[in-house]
Image (cartoon, rainbow, N blue to C red; front, side):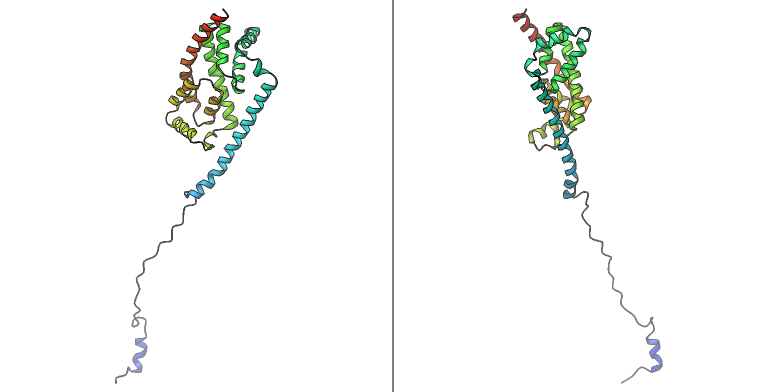
Length: 236
């Protein structure tokens, strides 16, 4: 049996002589952690404070409008108001009658008095043509001021309410804002609840104004003819 001479042992133990097989191992990529921003749970958690803020503003608006309605009811304004009464108040104001009419129109819609009552009062006070024009101008001024008051207090908080029919209308306001406002104005005209809903939606004021003007032209023109005929028939 042959043995390795002792003199060769150091040479065999050199690093070059000792060959350690290299193991090829590809670096493993770190496990992807879920994005805290894009995950549904994180998105829902981040949206919760905003939704609570919108509901809080909605509650403040309800308190404001409810308080104004209670005040108008307690003072007898809601029971005493009618087109003839409005005409008398405007006529007694003289040169300030136009400004007073606009102020009454604005406050009336805010406390849920039907806006067409003020259109009728303008026709009674100023005649068919002038009264119709004044009624349209008053409607645009009153709804515009109400828009900014309601949005200033309540914000754009309507989409925080989980109501499916409301969601469809809001989607239409996003895709076709002017056409949707025109349709709603033609159907509901100056209904106070419609004014509140449009102000609390995401519709821009420009679209609100243009849609309201176009949507009110037909109803107010028809109301002018009807009210003029009605008052001439029964009170003329």
